[in-house]
Length: 574
Ligand code: DON
Image (tube, rainbow, N blue to C red; front, side, top):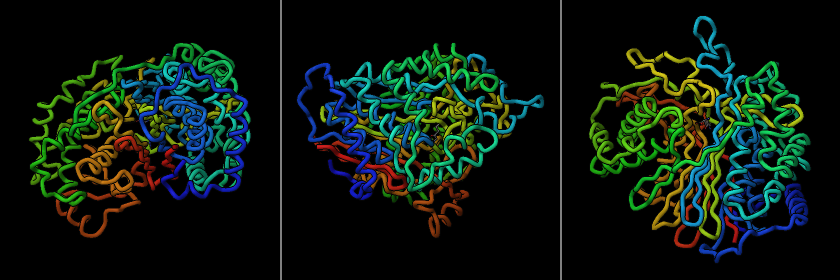
C-alpha cells in the first residue's frame, strides 16, 4: 500500500496494534469468492476516505479478495463507528456504482415516517417550533443506510456479508483512538443536544487521544452481521428503535418494515469527452452539476483568457449558479411523488439558452433570476463521502449522512447508534417565501413516505467506457458547486488530482443574493475581495467548504487524493 498523505505514514503505535488486531480478527473468517476473479485491469486498487480507520478497513477487504462494493460497504460500516458525526447506521445516502462495465445508482435516502405531516413542525401561528426538525426524536427520518449497504453487497459483493462487517465490529468492540477533529465536532454539537437528548450518555467520553469503545454498537453490528441487513428493520434492532421512539418520535415498526432502498437510473451526460455518471432526483446535485458543467463549456468564449478564481471568473460562475439554483428550487423533488423534468433541465439547447443570459458586465442581482423558496439555508455542512476503485476497474462513489453533525443527537438506547435529522431537509415551513414575489409551492414538503430533496452528488466520470474519476464531498448545497470546481480545475485547467482538491473553492447560490462565500482554507481577502465588492457582491466567510475524496485513473494507474481540509486518507493498494 502506498499512502498519498504523510499522515498515514506515521500510524501511531496504538493504531498499528489495532490494525494487527483487525487482521487477526479477520483471519478466522474465510473468504468465499462467489466466482473466479477476472484478471485485473488496473495496477492497483485505491480509496479516498475521510479517516485512517476506513482506509485500513479497505486494505483488509482488498487483501481478502473483495471488490469495490465490498470495500465500500465495509468502509461505510467502519465510519459508522470511527466517524460517528457523519458515518452512520441511522442515516441515509446515495451510492453510484460502476460494475462490470455498467453504471448503477442506489438511493437509500431516509423517508418521512407514515405519521409525518406537512405542518408537523409548526405551532398554531404557523412558525417552526424551536429546533424540533433538527434535534430530538421527531427530527428523524426512517433510516436507509443498512438497507442500502445490504442491497449493494448482496447484488455486487464477492465476499461474505460477515466479512465486510468484521472491521466495524472490531473498531466498536476494541475501540479506536479519537483525534482532535472528532472531539472538536463533538464539543460543538453537544451544546445543541445537552438536556434535550441522550447524546451525552453515549458520547461525553469522546476525547482526543483516548480509546473510545462502543459495546452496544458492536452488538448491533454483530446482529446485522449474523442475520443480514433486514435485522435492522425487522429484528431486535427494529424493536429497540420502536422503544426509543415510543412517546417521542414518529418512526414505527411498520415504517421500518416498509423501508426500501431504490435502484434508479443514474443521471448521465457527455462533457468534454467524458461520460458523467451522477445522482438523479431526489438529489438536486446531479442536475446542478451537469447544468454547471454544460453552461461553463457553452460559455467558452466568455471564459477565454479569464484567470481561474479571479473576480471576473467568480462573477461568471456566480451567474451560472444563480440559474442552476433557480431551477433546483423550482423543479427538483422526490421523483416518486412528482416527476422531475430531468431531460429538459439537462438538455444542451436549453442550457445554451440559459448560458446566453450570463454576462460579464451584468450587475449582480440587477435582474433577479426567478427566485424560489430559500431551502438551501437550512442545509447543514456535515455528511461524509468516500471513493473506491478496485483493480478490476469497478468503482463506488458513496455519500451518506445523518444531516447535521451527530444527526438528531438521539442514540437508540441499547443499540448504540445515532438517528438522523434528515426531516430538516424537507421544507418545514411550507408556503412561505423569503423573497417578496417568490412563488410558494408544494415542492419538497413533508408527506408520509416521501424522500426529501438532497444535494448529495456521488459522481463517477467514464472515459471510453472505463472509470476515469470518482469524486464526491459533503457540504449541503455546496456539494455540487464544490465537485464542479474540482472537476473543472482538473479538466479545464490541467491540475493534478492533489492540486485540484487543494485549490481554492468559493460558493454562491441564488439566495442570499449577491453573496460570495469563501472558506478558511483559502480565504478571499485583499484585492480579490475588493474587486468582488466593487462588482456589487458581499464577500463572506463560512466555516466549511467540503471534504473532497477523489480518485483519478490515468491509463491503468489510480491516484487518490483526500482533501487536506479534513483528516482523510488517499491510499493505493498494489
Ligand atoms: O442530503 C442532503 O443534501 C443533506 N442532508 C446533506 C447534508 C450535508 O451534506 C451536510 N454536509 N456536510
